[in-house]
Image (cartoon, rainbow, N blue to C red; front, top):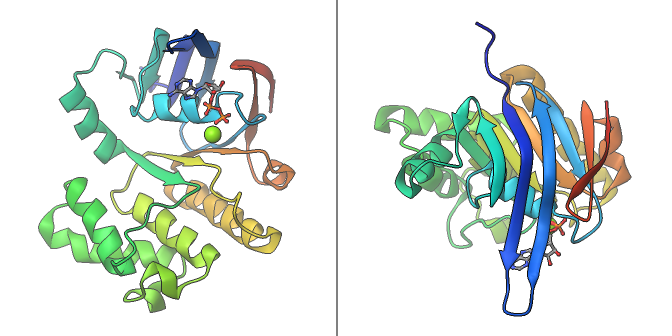
Length: 229
Ligand code: ADP
Ligand code: MG
């Protein structure tokens, strides 16, 4: 039996109901992604990138279509199962990194490790290994405000890695960073994909990402415009 795709979507739609109108944020989204690929999701502001990432990670639900992640039909899962599945399977990285400001790097990762049910005796090693992997082993005790924007984003990446996710979803993770730091973060993502066979799905409108990824999916008004390999 062939293993399932990392991601399988067919005719996914997401309509937001508002008081004045229905917003068709995603329309007829169909694609498959294999495990261990680095994918860029590109498109202008408002094209549906965040909505799609949220659906892929089980933070939001499509209103139509089929969506399977590692062979699991996450559209029909109960809210409780979905939360459990999400914490064990997905690592999220956001533009606003969402680090807890009064917590050290170690503590920020430890919180996520607990939520993701990393066994107690493995937690310390997982936290230190993840910080090592992003080059921040000397910043274990630092708090976010004691680090640069690029270092903070590395902490956010380490935090996403701590639960050993199979899929990392990164929503415009480099948009607040200068181009040199952007290159180093994209390099890091590439290494993670190659060494850990993780799938990374990253949204951006920065042309710099094109040279790092395996595949680019363009969104325009909620639809796939052109899929480039
Ligand atoms: P992007 O991340 O590419 O900027 P989004 O996924 O945030 O795009 O938004 C896609 C479309 O859906 C936009 O038209 C946006 O205004 C709309 N939208 C996003 N979130 C909501 C919401 N919670 N309620 C209503 N409309 C929304
Ligand atoms: Mg967005």
